[in-house]
Length: 355
Ligand code: NAD
Image (cartoon, rainbow, N blue to C red; front, side, top):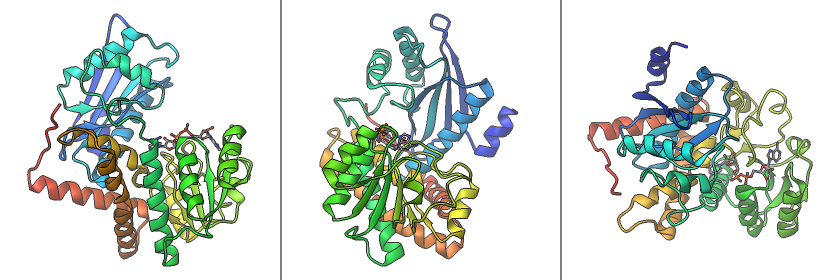
Protein backbone atom coordinates (compact mmCIF):
# COMPACT_ATOMS: atom_id res chain seq x y z
CA UNK A 1 0.00 0.00 0.00
CA UNK A 2 1.23 3.50 -0.84
CA UNK A 3 0.23 5.16 2.42
CA UNK A 4 0.42 8.79 1.29
CA UNK A 5 -1.57 7.96 -1.80
CA UNK A 6 -4.22 6.25 0.33
CA UNK A 7 -4.33 9.28 2.65
CA UNK A 8 -4.73 11.58 -0.33
CA UNK A 9 -7.52 9.45 -1.78
CA UNK A 10 -9.43 9.33 1.50
CA UNK A 11 -8.56 12.97 2.35
CA UNK A 12 -6.77 12.25 5.64
CA UNK A 13 -4.90 14.82 7.71
CA UNK A 14 -2.73 12.55 9.85
CA UNK A 15 -1.83 8.93 10.40
CA UNK A 16 0.15 8.22 13.56
CA UNK A 17 2.00 5.01 14.40
CA UNK A 18 2.59 4.36 18.08
CA UNK A 19 4.76 1.63 19.59
CA UNK A 20 5.34 0.87 23.26
CA UNK A 21 8.45 -1.12 24.10
CA UNK A 22 7.34 -2.36 27.52
CA UNK A 23 3.95 -3.82 26.50
CA UNK A 24 4.51 -4.39 22.79
CA UNK A 25 1.50 -2.17 21.97
CA UNK A 26 1.16 -1.31 18.31
CA UNK A 27 -1.48 1.32 17.76
CA UNK A 28 -2.48 3.38 14.77
CA UNK A 29 -4.36 6.65 15.13
CA UNK A 30 -6.01 7.94 11.96
CA UNK A 31 -7.23 11.54 11.92
CA UNK A 32 -9.39 12.09 8.91
CA UNK A 33 -10.86 15.60 9.06
CA UNK A 34 -10.89 18.04 11.96
CA UNK A 35 -12.71 20.93 10.28
CA UNK A 36 -15.66 20.67 12.65
CA UNK A 37 -13.64 19.98 15.81
CA UNK A 38 -11.32 17.37 17.35
CA UNK A 39 -11.49 13.82 16.05
CA UNK A 40 -14.06 11.59 17.75
CA UNK A 41 -14.16 7.84 17.17
CA UNK A 42 -13.78 4.62 19.11
CA UNK A 43 -10.72 2.49 19.79
CA UNK A 44 -10.75 -0.94 18.17
CA UNK A 45 -8.60 -3.83 19.36
CA UNK A 46 -8.36 -6.46 16.67
CA UNK A 47 -6.13 -9.26 15.41
CA UNK A 48 -5.50 -7.99 11.89
CA UNK A 49 -3.88 -10.35 9.40
CA UNK A 50 -1.35 -7.68 8.39
CA UNK A 51 -0.20 -4.14 9.10
CA UNK A 52 -1.68 -3.14 5.80
CA UNK A 53 -5.10 -4.40 6.89
CA UNK A 54 -4.86 -2.48 10.17
CA UNK A 55 -3.95 0.75 8.35
CA UNK A 56 -6.73 0.24 5.81
CA UNK A 57 -9.27 -0.29 8.61
CA UNK A 58 -8.08 2.81 10.49
CA UNK A 59 -8.34 4.93 7.32
CA UNK A 60 -11.76 3.59 6.37
CA UNK A 61 -13.28 3.83 9.85
CA UNK A 62 -11.96 7.32 10.63
CA UNK A 63 -13.35 8.65 7.36
CA UNK A 64 -16.68 7.04 8.26
CA UNK A 65 -16.57 8.90 11.59
CA UNK A 66 -16.16 12.26 9.83
CA UNK A 67 -19.38 11.66 7.92
CA UNK A 68 -21.20 10.16 10.87
CA UNK A 69 -20.31 13.07 13.18
CA UNK A 70 -21.11 15.70 10.55
CA UNK A 71 -24.46 14.09 9.85
CA UNK A 72 -25.22 13.78 13.55
CA UNK A 73 -24.81 17.57 13.74
CA UNK A 74 -22.09 17.43 16.41
CA UNK A 75 -18.95 19.59 16.52
CA UNK A 76 -16.42 16.82 16.01
CA UNK A 77 -14.27 15.57 13.18
CA UNK A 78 -13.50 11.95 12.40
CA UNK A 79 -10.79 9.77 13.93
CA UNK A 80 -10.23 6.15 14.89
CA UNK A 81 -7.67 4.31 16.99
CA UNK A 82 -6.74 0.78 16.00
CA UNK A 83 -4.72 -1.52 18.26
CA UNK A 84 -2.90 -4.08 16.17
CA UNK A 85 -2.31 -6.83 18.76
CA UNK A 86 -3.91 -10.10 19.73
CA UNK A 87 -7.13 -8.87 21.43
CA UNK A 88 -7.03 -11.80 23.86
CA UNK A 89 -3.64 -10.73 25.17
CA UNK A 90 -4.67 -7.48 26.77
CA UNK A 91 -2.66 -6.31 29.77
CA UNK A 92 -3.16 -3.24 31.95
CA UNK A 93 0.30 -2.17 30.84
CA UNK A 94 -0.81 -2.21 27.21
CA UNK A 95 -4.06 -0.37 27.92
CA UNK A 96 -2.29 2.32 29.92
CA UNK A 97 0.24 2.71 27.10
CA UNK A 98 -2.64 3.19 24.63
CA UNK A 99 -4.07 5.84 26.95
CA UNK A 100 -0.69 7.60 27.14
CA UNK A 101 -0.51 7.90 23.37
CA UNK A 102 -4.03 9.36 23.28
CA UNK A 103 -3.05 11.82 26.02
CA UNK A 104 0.04 12.90 24.06
CA UNK A 105 -2.25 14.18 21.31
CA UNK A 106 -3.46 16.75 23.83
CA UNK A 107 -7.14 16.75 22.81
CA UNK A 108 -6.72 16.37 19.05
CA UNK A 109 -8.79 13.20 19.49
CA UNK A 110 -11.35 11.75 21.88
CA UNK A 111 -11.94 8.01 21.95
CA UNK A 112 -13.86 5.26 23.73
CA UNK A 113 -14.95 1.63 23.67
CA UNK A 114 -15.24 -0.23 20.37
CA UNK A 115 -14.86 -3.83 19.17
CA UNK A 116 -12.36 -5.80 21.29
CA UNK A 117 -12.43 -3.48 24.31
CA UNK A 118 -14.71 -3.56 27.37
CA UNK A 119 -15.89 -0.76 29.67
CA UNK A 120 -13.38 -2.11 32.24
CA UNK A 121 -10.55 -1.74 29.71
CA UNK A 122 -11.53 1.90 29.20
CA UNK A 123 -11.38 2.48 32.95
CA UNK A 124 -7.80 1.13 32.98
CA UNK A 125 -6.96 3.42 30.07
CA UNK A 126 -8.43 6.34 32.00
CA UNK A 127 -5.48 6.07 34.39
CA UNK A 128 -3.32 7.62 31.69
CA UNK A 129 -5.62 9.86 29.63
CA UNK A 130 -8.41 12.40 30.07
CA UNK A 131 -9.59 12.13 26.48
CA UNK A 132 -12.11 9.31 26.83
CA UNK A 133 -15.85 9.40 26.23
CA UNK A 134 -18.85 7.22 27.13
CA UNK A 135 -17.60 6.35 30.61
CA UNK A 136 -20.22 5.11 33.10
CA UNK A 137 -20.26 8.28 35.24
CA UNK A 138 -20.72 10.44 32.11
CA UNK A 139 -23.06 9.48 29.23
CA UNK A 140 -22.65 5.71 29.87
CA UNK A 141 -24.11 2.95 27.69
CA UNK A 142 -25.17 4.51 24.35
CA UNK A 143 -27.39 1.62 23.22
CA UNK A 144 -30.71 3.17 24.36
CA UNK A 145 -29.87 6.33 22.40
CA UNK A 146 -28.84 4.21 19.40
CA UNK A 147 -32.21 2.40 19.61
CA UNK A 148 -34.11 5.70 19.77
CA UNK A 149 -32.21 6.95 16.69
CA UNK A 150 -33.10 3.74 14.88
CA UNK A 151 -36.74 4.05 15.91
CA UNK A 152 -37.11 7.63 14.62
CA UNK A 153 -35.29 6.59 11.44
CA UNK A 154 -37.79 3.79 10.86
CA UNK A 155 -40.63 6.28 11.29
CA UNK A 156 -39.02 8.73 8.81
CA UNK A 157 -38.47 5.89 6.32
CA UNK A 158 -42.07 4.67 6.63
CA UNK A 159 -43.27 8.21 6.08
CA UNK A 160 -41.19 8.54 2.93
CA UNK A 161 -42.36 5.27 1.43
CA UNK A 162 -45.97 5.06 2.63
CA UNK A 163 -46.83 8.71 3.27
CA UNK A 164 -47.18 8.20 7.01
CA UNK A 165 -44.69 7.15 9.67
CA UNK A 166 -46.85 5.34 12.20
CA UNK A 167 -45.45 1.82 12.72
CA UNK A 168 -48.91 0.52 13.80
CA UNK A 169 -49.72 -2.58 11.77
CA UNK A 170 -46.43 -2.46 9.85
CA UNK A 171 -44.46 -5.70 9.59
CA UNK A 172 -40.92 -5.18 10.87
CA UNK A 173 -38.20 -7.88 10.92
CA UNK A 174 -35.42 -7.27 13.45
CA UNK A 175 -32.13 -9.11 12.95
CA UNK A 176 -30.35 -9.30 16.31
CA UNK A 177 -32.02 -9.09 19.74
CA UNK A 178 -29.12 -7.51 21.64
CA UNK A 179 -29.01 -4.16 23.42
CA UNK A 180 -30.28 -2.11 20.49
CA UNK A 181 -32.58 -4.71 18.89
CA UNK A 182 -34.44 -5.44 22.13
CA UNK A 183 -35.02 -1.76 22.97
CA UNK A 184 -36.11 -1.06 19.40
CA UNK A 185 -38.57 -3.96 19.57
CA UNK A 186 -39.98 -2.59 22.82
CA UNK A 187 -40.66 0.83 21.24
CA UNK A 188 -42.17 -0.62 18.06
CA UNK A 189 -44.37 -3.06 19.99
CA UNK A 190 -45.75 -0.14 21.99
CA UNK A 191 -46.79 1.42 18.68
CA UNK A 192 -48.59 -1.75 17.62
CA UNK A 193 -46.14 -2.95 14.95
CA UNK A 194 -46.14 -6.63 13.91
CA UNK A 195 -42.65 -7.84 14.78
CA UNK A 196 -40.39 -10.71 13.70
CA UNK A 197 -37.17 -11.30 15.57
CA UNK A 198 -34.13 -13.57 15.38
CA UNK A 199 -30.78 -13.98 17.12
CA UNK A 200 -27.94 -16.48 16.83
CA UNK A 201 -28.33 -16.70 20.60
CA UNK A 202 -31.93 -17.98 20.62
CA UNK A 203 -32.54 -17.16 24.29
CA UNK A 204 -32.19 -13.46 23.45
CA UNK A 205 -34.75 -13.61 20.66
CA UNK A 206 -37.06 -15.65 22.91
CA UNK A 207 -36.83 -13.00 25.63
CA UNK A 208 -37.77 -10.25 23.17
CA UNK A 209 -40.59 -12.34 21.70
CA UNK A 210 -42.01 -12.98 25.18
CA UNK A 211 -41.89 -9.27 26.04
CA UNK A 212 -43.26 -7.91 22.76
CA UNK A 213 -45.33 -10.65 21.14
CA UNK A 214 -42.88 -10.82 18.21
CA UNK A 215 -42.82 -13.94 16.04
CA UNK A 216 -39.59 -15.93 16.40
CA UNK A 217 -37.68 -16.57 13.17
CA UNK A 218 -34.42 -18.44 12.66
CA UNK A 219 -31.38 -16.31 11.74
CA UNK A 220 -31.26 -18.05 8.36
CA UNK A 221 -34.91 -17.27 7.55
CA UNK A 222 -35.06 -13.61 8.58
CA UNK A 223 -34.15 -12.44 5.05
CA UNK A 224 -37.23 -14.15 3.61
CA UNK A 225 -39.81 -12.55 5.90
CA UNK A 226 -42.38 -10.58 3.89
CA UNK A 227 -42.26 -7.25 5.68
CA UNK A 228 -42.29 -3.47 5.35
CA UNK A 229 -38.98 -2.95 7.16
CA UNK A 230 -35.92 -5.16 7.47
CA UNK A 231 -33.91 -3.87 10.44
CA UNK A 232 -30.33 -5.19 10.75
CA UNK A 233 -29.32 -4.80 14.41
CA UNK A 234 -26.71 -7.58 14.64
CA UNK A 235 -23.27 -7.49 13.04
CA UNK A 236 -22.20 -5.90 9.76
CA UNK A 237 -22.12 -7.20 6.17
CA UNK A 238 -25.43 -9.05 6.40
CA UNK A 239 -26.65 -7.46 3.16
CA UNK A 240 -24.50 -9.18 0.61
CA UNK A 241 -24.68 -11.03 -2.69
CA UNK A 242 -26.31 -14.04 -1.06
CA UNK A 243 -29.00 -12.14 0.84
CA UNK A 244 -29.86 -8.95 -1.06
CA UNK A 245 -32.06 -10.77 -3.59
CA UNK A 246 -34.02 -12.49 -0.84
CA UNK A 247 -35.20 -9.34 0.95
CA UNK A 248 -38.97 -8.93 0.81
CA UNK A 249 -38.97 -5.48 2.44
CA UNK A 250 -39.69 -1.96 1.18
CA UNK A 251 -37.20 -0.42 3.62
CA UNK A 252 -33.84 -1.40 5.13
CA UNK A 253 -33.27 0.56 8.33
CA UNK A 254 -31.28 -0.75 11.29
CA UNK A 255 -28.50 0.07 13.73
CA UNK A 256 -25.74 -2.33 12.66
CA UNK A 257 -22.51 -0.79 11.42
CA UNK A 258 -21.40 -1.55 7.85
CA UNK A 259 -24.56 -3.37 6.80
CA UNK A 260 -23.69 -3.42 3.11
CA UNK A 261 -20.96 -5.89 2.13
CA UNK A 262 -20.09 -3.75 -0.91
CA UNK A 263 -21.06 -0.39 -2.39
CA UNK A 264 -22.96 -2.17 -5.18
CA UNK A 265 -25.46 -3.38 -2.59
CA UNK A 266 -26.78 0.19 -2.27
CA UNK A 267 -27.33 0.22 -6.05
CA UNK A 268 -28.98 -3.17 -5.94
CA UNK A 269 -31.39 -2.10 -3.18
CA UNK A 270 -32.26 1.02 -5.16
CA UNK A 271 -32.80 -1.01 -8.32
CA UNK A 272 -35.20 -3.23 -6.37
CA UNK A 273 -37.04 -0.14 -5.09
CA UNK A 274 -36.03 -0.81 -1.48
CA UNK A 275 -35.31 2.38 0.45
CA UNK A 276 -31.99 2.13 2.27
CA UNK A 277 -31.54 4.36 5.33
CA UNK A 278 -27.71 4.61 5.59
CA UNK A 279 -26.48 2.83 8.70
CA UNK A 280 -24.09 5.55 9.82
CA UNK A 281 -26.99 8.02 10.02
CA UNK A 282 -29.49 5.62 11.58
CA UNK A 283 -27.12 4.60 14.38
CA UNK A 284 -25.87 8.16 15.03
CA UNK A 285 -27.90 8.27 18.28
CA UNK A 286 -24.97 6.71 20.13
CA UNK A 287 -22.54 9.44 19.15
CA UNK A 288 -25.06 12.27 19.67
CA UNK A 289 -25.57 10.98 23.20
CA UNK A 290 -21.81 10.91 23.84
CA UNK A 291 -21.26 14.41 22.41
CA UNK A 292 -23.64 15.79 25.03
CA UNK A 293 -20.90 15.18 27.62
CA UNK A 294 -19.17 18.27 26.25
CA UNK A 295 -22.04 20.68 26.91
CA UNK A 296 -21.73 23.25 29.69
CA UNK A 297 -22.78 21.58 32.92
CA UNK A 298 -22.09 18.11 31.54
CA UNK A 299 -24.28 15.34 30.17
CA UNK A 300 -28.05 15.81 30.30
CA UNK A 301 -30.15 12.80 29.36
CA UNK A 302 -33.28 14.75 28.31
CA UNK A 303 -31.36 17.15 26.08
CA UNK A 304 -29.29 14.34 24.55
CA UNK A 305 -32.37 12.26 23.69
CA UNK A 306 -34.17 15.29 22.23
CA UNK A 307 -31.18 15.74 19.91
CA UNK A 308 -31.20 12.07 18.95
CA UNK A 309 -34.80 12.49 17.77
CA UNK A 310 -33.66 15.05 15.18
CA UNK A 311 -31.98 12.23 13.23
CA UNK A 312 -35.41 11.62 11.70
CA UNK A 313 -35.53 15.15 10.22
CA UNK A 314 -32.08 14.80 8.67
CA UNK A 315 -33.06 11.50 7.15
CA UNK A 316 -36.17 13.08 5.56
CA UNK A 317 -33.95 15.74 3.94
CA UNK A 318 -31.58 13.05 2.76
CA UNK A 319 -34.30 10.98 1.07
CA UNK A 320 -35.43 14.07 -0.82
CA UNK A 321 -31.91 14.92 -1.88
CA UNK A 322 -31.20 11.38 -3.08
CA UNK A 323 -34.32 11.55 -5.25
CA UNK A 324 -33.47 15.02 -6.57
CA UNK A 325 -29.89 13.97 -7.44
CA UNK A 326 -31.02 10.55 -8.68
CA UNK A 327 -28.31 8.80 -6.63
CA UNK A 328 -28.29 6.21 -3.86
CA UNK A 329 -29.03 7.41 -0.34
CA UNK A 330 -25.41 6.54 0.58
CA UNK A 331 -23.99 8.87 -2.05
CA UNK A 332 -26.47 11.62 -1.20
CA UNK A 333 -25.47 11.27 2.48
CA UNK A 334 -21.81 11.80 1.64
CA UNK A 335 -22.73 14.89 -0.41
CA UNK A 336 -24.80 16.30 2.45
CA UNK A 337 -22.06 15.70 5.03
CA UNK A 338 -19.41 17.25 2.76
CA UNK A 339 -21.60 20.34 2.18
CA UNK A 340 -22.09 20.73 5.91
CA UNK A 341 -18.32 20.52 6.57
CA UNK A 342 -17.56 23.01 3.77
CA UNK A 343 -20.17 25.48 5.02
CA UNK A 344 -18.75 25.41 8.54
CA UNK A 345 -15.16 25.59 7.24
CA UNK A 346 -16.07 28.88 5.56
CA UNK A 347 -17.23 30.23 8.90
CA UNK A 348 -13.83 29.12 10.30
CA UNK A 349 -15.61 27.79 13.33
CA UNK A 350 -13.64 25.24 15.30
CA UNK A 351 -14.94 23.77 18.49
CA UNK A 352 -12.51 23.35 21.37
CA UNK A 353 -14.14 21.18 24.03
CA UNK A 354 -13.77 22.02 27.68
CA UNK A 355 -12.41 19.18 29.79
P1 NAD B 1 -25.24 -6.59 20.92
O1 NAD B 1 -23.99 -7.36 20.90
O2 NAD B 1 -25.89 -6.26 22.23
O3 NAD B 1 -26.37 -7.31 20.02
C1 NAD B 1 -26.11 -7.88 18.80
C2 NAD B 1 -26.91 -9.18 18.75
O4 NAD B 1 -26.85 -9.74 17.42
C3 NAD B 1 -26.40 -10.25 19.71
O5 NAD B 1 -27.45 -10.70 20.53
C4 NAD B 1 -25.88 -11.35 18.77
O6 NAD B 1 -26.06 -12.65 19.31
C5 NAD B 1 -26.75 -11.15 17.55
N1 NAD B 1 -26.22 -11.64 16.28
C6 NAD B 1 -24.96 -11.67 15.82
N2 NAD B 1 -24.92 -12.16 14.57
C7 NAD B 1 -26.19 -12.45 14.22
C8 NAD B 1 -26.80 -12.97 13.05
N3 NAD B 1 -26.09 -13.30 11.97
N4 NAD B 1 -28.14 -13.14 13.05
C9 NAD B 1 -28.88 -12.83 14.13
N5 NAD B 1 -28.36 -12.32 15.27
C10 NAD B 1 -27.03 -12.13 15.32
O7 NAD B 1 -24.95 -5.24 20.10
P2 NAD B 1 -25.81 -3.91 20.11
O8 NAD B 1 -25.22 -2.94 21.07
O9 NAD B 1 -27.24 -4.25 20.21
O10 NAD B 1 -25.49 -3.32 18.65
C11 NAD B 1 -26.12 -3.86 17.51
C12 NAD B 1 -25.49 -3.25 16.26
O11 NAD B 1 -25.63 -1.83 16.28
C13 NAD B 1 -23.99 -3.51 16.12
O12 NAD B 1 -23.68 -3.66 14.76
C14 NAD B 1 -23.37 -2.24 16.65
O13 NAD B 1 -22.09 -2.01 16.08
C15 NAD B 1 -24.35 -1.20 16.19
N6 NAD B 1 -24.33 0.00 17.00
C16 NAD B 1 -24.55 -0.09 18.34
C17 NAD B 1 -24.52 1.07 19.12
C18 NAD B 1 -24.72 0.98 20.60
O14 NAD B 1 -24.72 2.03 21.23
N7 NAD B 1 -24.92 -0.18 21.19
C19 NAD B 1 -24.27 2.31 18.53
C20 NAD B 1 -24.07 2.39 17.15
C21 NAD B 1 -24.11 1.21 16.40
